[in-house]
Structures are given as structure tokens and as C-alpha cells.
Image (tube, rainbow, N blue to C red; front, side, top):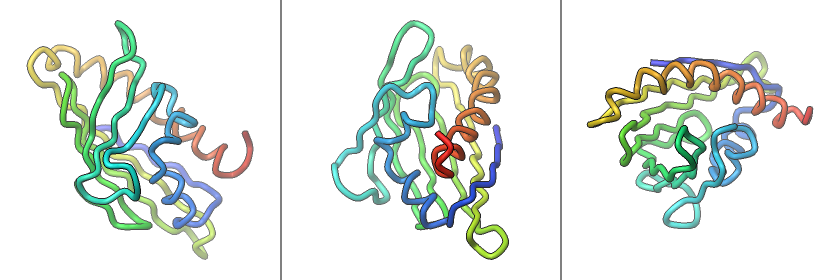
Length: 145
């Protein structure tokens, strides 16, 4: 399990709204080439997020499903395809007077089939990239691009 937190100088509602725009994740997550949701429209439990990610061997499409969504505090997603399937929880908590937020990502990468061999390497890489991606999220949210 990978757990990483960062404080962002924006209200939880603003952070949640931005994170909930999955098509924009490529702005702050370095491995994402493109993302879309199915069906189009507002995110609800059951919405699928289709991401094209850079991985060794070339870009590949991964599908995750939203399994819990409690605005503006929590999003839980579960990978539904591929040899390594993520299960993640994004929690957004108010800090101080509520004008700041703590964003925590808990991520588990579960190997299926041949993915069991690669899951260890994927976890090692995620431990490096998750904090960098969160730092980029902070820069964007605080207007420090």
C-alpha cells in the first residue's frame, strides 16, 4: 500500500472539483497521456474512467470504476482490467479554518496473472511518482505553474 499526503492552499470543495475532472488528470499525473469517462457527464458511482498511460513497452489503456464518491471528501476507484489493477482512495480534508486542504492518496496495485510478477516494480515506481504528481497538483491548484 502506498500512502502519500500533501497540503494545498485551496478549499476542499475546489480541490475535489478539480480532481473529479478526470480528463484533466494528465495535467498533473506524469504517466497519463489521455483520459475520458464513460458515460459522459457527471461522475457517479459506476462511472468508468479510461486512461491511456505511459508504461514500459508503450502506451496502454486502463479502465477504473468509481466505487465510492462522497463530495467534497472522498473518491474510491478500482481497476477493472489489465495485469496490474489499482485500488485507490483519495481523501480531501479541511485544514485549519477550511481554506486549505490535505489530500491523501492511498493506492494499492494488485497483480493479476502475469501482473503478479510486475506488481512489485509498479509499486516501487509509484512510490516515486505519486509524491511528484501530488506536488504538481499543488502547484496547479495554487497557481504556481
